Amino acid sequence: MASINDYITAFDKLAKRFSEMEGWECRQEKGNAYLHVSKPNWQDENMNGIHLETYIMDGQLQSGYAPVCVHCEGGFPKQREFMQLFTEKARKKISWPGYKVKGPHGCSVCEIMVPIKSTADETINDLATELIRLQSLAPLIDSTIKDVLAK
Image 1 (tube, rainbow, N blue to C red):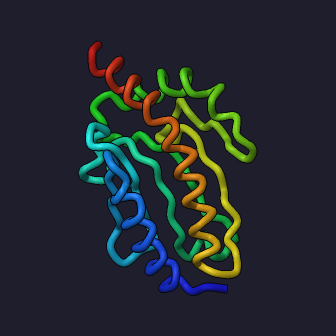
Image 2: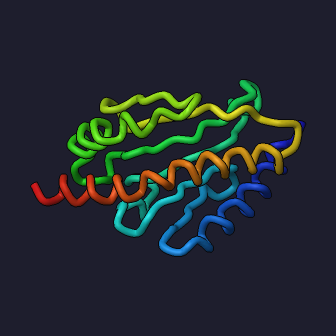
């Protein structure tokens, strides 16, 4: 099984891949295999707004699973309103196998637990697949942001 350092290196490559996508931003927790993917208007500059998130730390290595999720944290000015409206709008779209809708309470709209494979690259490919799937929700996230900020 890959080490945490292997995952940190792989997450650096994953961040580069997503930051090269037009209109997308990536933020990492330095020294960790931890990634936020967001759009500029999602107010995630301080890693506490709306973002797609994945990470692998010791707990994930022990459990054998890494989360990929959509979060709206307290740094977004109308977190509660966003969570309520976006969960309502997205519930039917988030019907992909393995996904759990967790909103509107808390900060996690939805989540999938991705099995950790024998190599970091294999695992990263699976995490990237799920991040790309969640990127398809971007237009709905954008329209929800617009709706809640207009109130």
